[in-house]
Length: 138
Figure 1 (cartoon, rainbow, N blue to C red):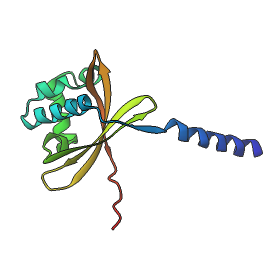
Figure 2 (figure 1 turned 180 degrees about the vertical axis):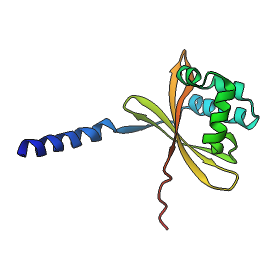
Figure 3 (figure 1 turned 90 degrees about the vertical axis):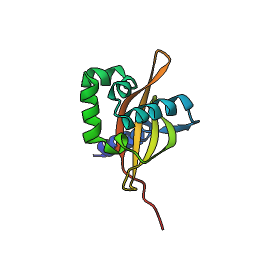
Figure 4 (figure 1 turned 45 degrees about the vertical axis):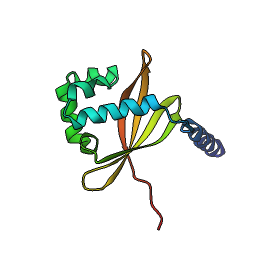
């Protein structure tokens, strides 16, 4: 039993280091890539928006039309944001994640993490995850 408890304690302490993250200085090229994709969505230019996706995402969705349909249905706040604000750029386990705060047309705030990947010197979006909005204390 003692070995089990010691093992669990060790595993728990290691898990914290796996998720350690460093906040980095803003990277204008990353913000530019994300903003350019959002600008393309605002124009319903899914072909251009698709060019900012990583090769893995392009393989997964195969066409700009499929990609556009996924964004319209699953990420309407990305397709039609009222406002875009860039939060922290973080290094998590060697991956770069840019927090983006989007205000939708109803005035609701949405927090998203954009996983970024540099390919041939250009930043590409490798995935987007909707985050839970932070609690606001009054």
